[in-house]
Image (cartoon, rainbow, N blue to C red):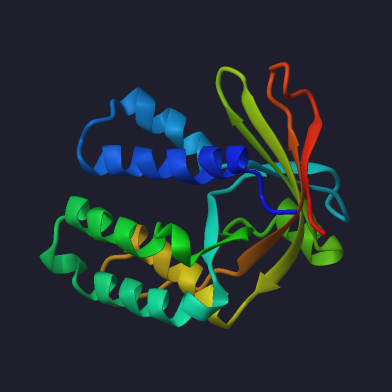
Length: 203
C-alpha cells in the first residue's frame, strides 16, 4: 500500500510551494507561520518519562541510494554560505533536498535537541505518533517506529540541514537524529473524510 497522495500533497508538495514562495518573497509573515505547521508536528510519546507531546521540525529523508549525493551537495552549500545571501542558499537548497524523485516517502527525519521526555520515551520504546495540524481543519495522525542515529549518514544529513540555517563559522552540530518510519496514517481533519479515518497502513 503506497503513501496516499493526499498526505504527500499536504506534507511535501504544498510545503515545497511555500518554500518557493518564501524564497521569492511572495508570502506574508502570517502565511509563513501557517505553512510551518506542515513541517513541525507534535511528537507524541509514552514511556518512562510519561505521556508527552513535543513540537519538532521534520522532513522526508532522501532514499538511501541518493544519500551520499545529497550530503555532498549540502556540504558544498555550507562551504559557500559566506559568499551567498540566505535567500540564494535557500533557493539552491530547494533544488537539493526537495527533489521528489530522490525522496523516500516512507521515512521522516528530525533531530533531538532537548533530551527530556521525548528522548527518554523513544529510547525506551522506539515508538512515536506525529500529529500534524494546519488550521482551520486539516490534521493527520502518523504512527511511527523510530530509530535513533548518533552516527552514520542519516545523522550527518540531518545535522547538515540544521547547519545550513543555524551554524556560522567552522563549528558543526552533532545532535542525535530520529528516523521516523511510517506505519499508519489517520486523517483526523474536521471534514467528512476525516475524524480518524485510516488512510495508510504499511504492509
